[in-house]
Image 1 (cartoon, rainbow, N blue to C red):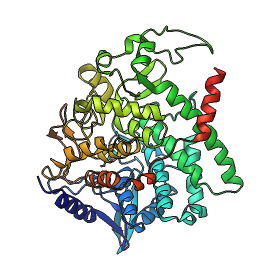
Image 2 (tube, rainbow, N blue to C red; image 1 turned 90 degrees about the horizontal axis):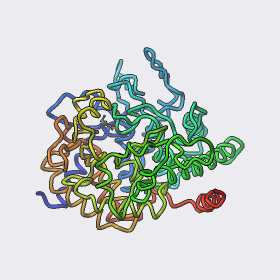
Image 3 (cartoon, rainbow, N blue to C red; image 1 turned 45 degrees about the vertical axis):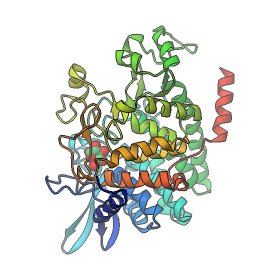
Image 4 (cartoon, protein in one colour; image 1 turned 90 degrees about the vertical axis):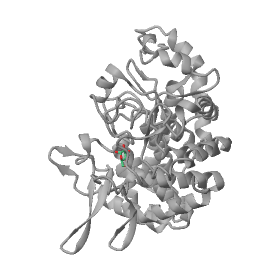
Length: 469
Ligand code: GLC
């Protein structure tokens, strides 16, 4: 194993090499620079992948690349998104973009999902974009950029798309399968936690970014209202711990009307057997998804971590999630932080949920693989909840392998001991995720770029709602 300072140096060099230039200016980073396999679309700059690198550049006083990225992706948002029968909503941000040259000129071409495997919609991109814009403003103090008319317009297009009326009863956002980091069919359609947590964080960012004025004021009101009901809904209905599990176990079904306790008609028999043993005495987490007679009991890491960072999870819940991670360390962190979701779906369930996806076989890739990029979010929550030792433990674990294994995209196996079967090497967000994790642990003052405090107004409102029930 290399010394830790050599590791940091190597990672920085690799990150600099991954920078994409457009007309002479840095605008993002490629997803991976794997010398061994064909690049497919890994030579593109993915919005979600760039987030950790962008935060690092901000921390290191290099905001230009983030500014350029925000400007160029904003321009792509309003570009024509029609191809074949694929017709995306106006505010949608691309999953990724690429620099191309014609006639001696450079152009950016974007993928809004119309090229992606499975034609999946990148719902998370516009949410990450808002979070990055807020981080940029926080780090540089440059609110003028966010207040420019094009930016205000872009923010409002995103809000329109996210807050549009739908055939849906919930304050959560209804999305198709594969709408976020898990961009393949994995039974994560409907109201997956990761999207809801990102949605919540993005609305909080919008609250800070909307310029005062008639349009801004109207949207602030709409955003505020949605934030409080979304917060209530997630805390109230997604939360799982032993006591909640006991409630669900004794739920009656078929309740009609307002007084229903089992509002979503969850049948006790749907509680998976593994969970009755796995749920610790102390600790809990937010469920992966919730819909009619459907509770996805899997633990999805990024959704839970974003819920802590955005204060969507209450302080008590945040501590309980950390308790769970600590007590189920071997399952959730293992040899490489951290598992994308736990447990894997197997056998018939794998066939049905993934459509027999050979890349998502049990304990691989999105189906229970370990993703080093999650390290930075884990370090951030460890720091935010006052438990940095857990963050350090994870970083030290990752340091044993990352460089030696050539910075893989993901690991396989129950405890993440095998480099992923189809994993890219020199994956950029693995590299930036590692550097950013160290940064948050060493310099906690930077955490505020990506975290939100508990909203006191919301707390008061939640108290009132509870009193009324
Ligand atoms: C895979 C991941 C996705 C990521 C992309 C580029 O498709 O599932 O989350 O953005 O690779 O790294």
